[in-house]
Length: 200
Image (cartoon, rainbow, N blue to C red):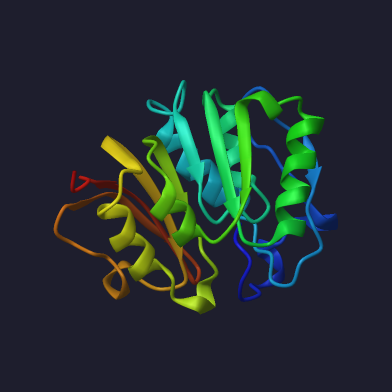
């Protein structure tokens, strides 16, 4: 999903595409920007994630904070999310997401912001029901962004936060007001669903 360290070939969709695996646009394939280290979330991980989110995704307002290919946010929209905000600092990658949304005629349910994730969180006064965090693995961004989210207005009461990382949760999990709901591992990828009680 995010741009960062290259992963084994099995984690990259063939032909520079992502495949929507469920919902309204199930089976649709969308092109992915040719960007160094772009790492879309693997199909099997996405399927597990959205099985977890099935009771909560319909009508949800979502935030894809390190959007990359947009695979998570687009999948959420396909499965009935009301709206998704896509944030990425790479303008070329984000332009490809906007093009994919236009192809799906989903532009009215999404907005895209070309900026650093930390800057977006610092300026955002809107609550989101579901937040996707899949930052570049090599940059160790999770500890800082998790702490920033906890202190911000972005998570509302009972918001769910999905996190994907190349490190086990022990390396970045903030504890305190964070509750681990689900945690799994696929090869070198650790992923899980959490609830953050915001400090406001």
